[in-house]
Amino acid sequence: MIDKTIQIDELVERYPAAVKYLMDRGIKCVVCGEPIWGSLEEVCLAKGFDQADIQQFVSELRQLALE
Image (cartoon, rainbow, N blue to C red):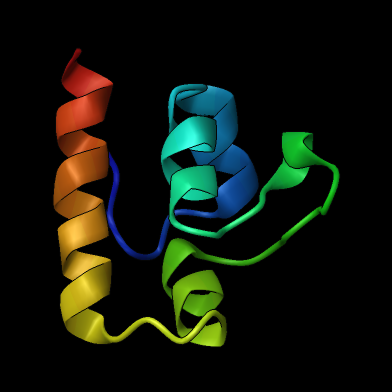
């Protein structure tokens, strides 16, 4: 299940489509050449996103995972 505590490496391993989703929002990830470790929430906060953004990302990533 995708939530804000999911680790970035686990997210992209389980849901490869998440790579493009994250890149489109300025969050480079493990396979993109700039390894980022930590939870989705930690990475988003470090990139300047707030809790509302993070909740939206979680919701959209969950939907993406269903496709």
